[in-house]
Length: 128
Picture 1 (tube, rainbow, N blue to C red):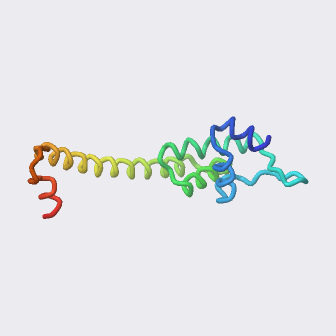
Picture 2 (tube, rainbow, N blue to C red; picture 1 turned 180 degrees about the horizontal axis):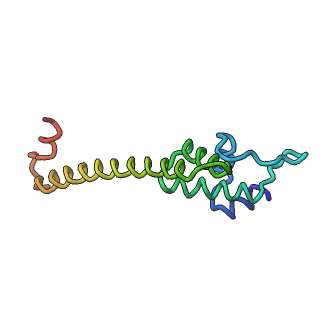
Picture 3 (spheres, helix red, strand yellow; picture 1 turned 180 degrees about the vertical axis):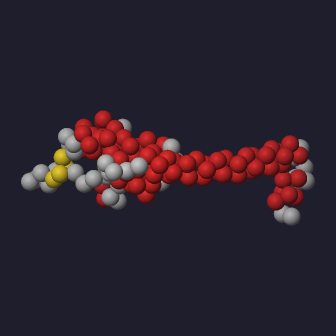
């Protein structure tokens, strides 16, 4: 399959597919005598894995690790679960931090009259 077909099948842009190859995230495709990339079904699986892992918040480096694990018949599910658990903890921490930020902003917005006067509790809080 050529890159255009693979792009349609995976929903990834040709540019993203080339980047994943360049960064070693996916297995390099076979090159024809003319230098064209030839992708296989295993590339489709790898690219789908990368796309789904990225949408779950994993970095490209982490996606590369998942591709390596997917291609390793001696992998242990505990390795995969451990990585997913770490990401879950990281996301939970970020959610707590964002919740704190939202709560602070809500307090500031509620405290500010938002009228035509120069006095602004938000500016007062930010300049403390």
